[in-house]
Amino acid sequence: VCFDVETTGLSPVKDKIIEIGALKVKNGKIVEKFEEFINPQIELPERIVALTHITDDMLKNAETEEKVVGRFLDFVGDNIIMGHNIGFDYSFVKTAAVKCKRNFDNLGIDTLELSIVLLPDMESKSLESMCRHYNIINQNAHRAYDDAKATALLYVSLSNEFFSLKPEVFKPKPLYYKVRKINPITTKQKNYLLDLIKYHKIENIQSVDTLTQSEASRIIDKIILKKGRII
Image 1: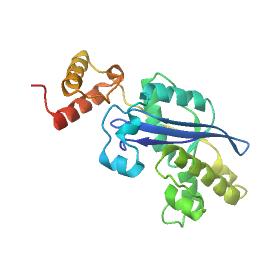
Image 2: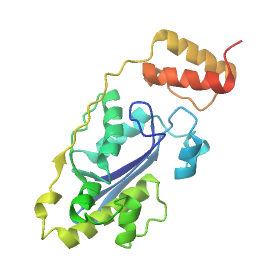
Image 3: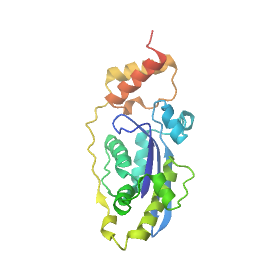
Image 4: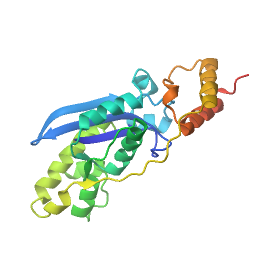
């Protein structure tokens, strides 16, 4: 399963997944795909909208992280997973999986790592650069499914060129990411956040019960900064 996530930022602790895209490949053919938005329950940073072209309006009717990630984990099953700089994507899904009390310990293949080992003289090993090198067309870069598909095609290109020379580097490996202890939202935080949401008539925050203490604190701070305290 080759997958990619789009997120609100770079930290799996502080930021949220907003889109998961994946394709299941069997015997060299795409047999199934997964493509879903996630409502992050916060307003998207402008830089993320500019990068991904995903907007708050596109996410407002999406389901919560818990439900979407749960379906994604069912989709993945015990298959080998693949991504470009897979550690980033894995860290976000692993964090979400722990919140859902689910396991996500699949073996993985990183096409970024393959690119570094197999093409050391290339200045940039970004997905965009590697696609350009192999003439892979990715018309919707920074959208999860399209990046996942481009990554799968990159793996095919690398395999065609190098597998017979260095088969050992293509072997899947265990992935590691230690998720910080997660403390659920306190009753005090929950009540105050619900009061803020009602007071300011905020519609894009869904399940407050699933928030952690740190997530609740960040959302409360952002609401107060943007809209003010309850008077």
